[in-house]
Amino acid sequence: MKLNFNPDGFTVPVDPNLIKQLELLTDKENLEANVTELVFNFRDKSYSANLGGYHPVEISIYLENAMWNFEYITDFSYLGSVFPELIAEVDFDFRNNILNVSYASKTFISAEIDFFNLWQSNFLSYLLTGAFDEIEVS
Image 1 (cartoon, rainbow, N blue to C red):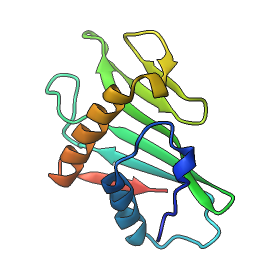
Image 2 (cartoon, one colour; image 1 turned 120 degrees about the horizontal axis):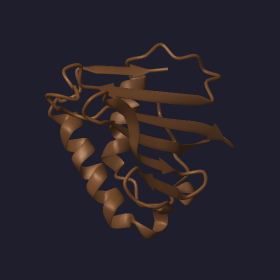
Image 3 (cartoon, rainbow, N blue to C red; image 1 turned 90 degrees about the horizontal axis):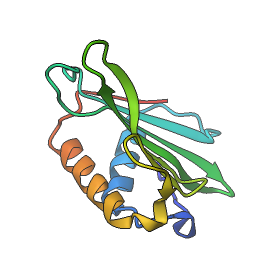
C-alpha cells in the first residue's frame, strides 16, 4: 500500500526509510481500501524489566485529504524496580507538536530535531537488524 505522506505535515524531518518500512509492512497486510488510520506495534518479546532489550514502539498515522500524516510515535520502557510498570518513556505527539519524555518537561518536537533524528536513526537500525520479533499493523 503506497503511503503518500503530506510533506508539509512533518513537524521534523522524517527519514524516507521509515516511510518505506511502514509501506513494506502495510503491503504484507490485507487492508481495506477505506482505511483512515493505521497503528504499527513493534515488540521485542524478550524485553523485560530485569533483562532489558528493545523498547516496544507504537506508531500511529492517519489519512487526511488523501495524504497520510503522523499522529504519534511512542517508545515504551519499564519504570520502577520492585513493581516495574511499562510506561510511555518518549512520546512524539505530531498533531500538537509536543514531545513528552518521562524524565523531562514537555517541549515542542520542532525544538528537539536532533533528539528526534537520533531516536529515529536508532529505531530504524533496530528494525532493519530484526530486533523486533513481533510487529502488528491494525
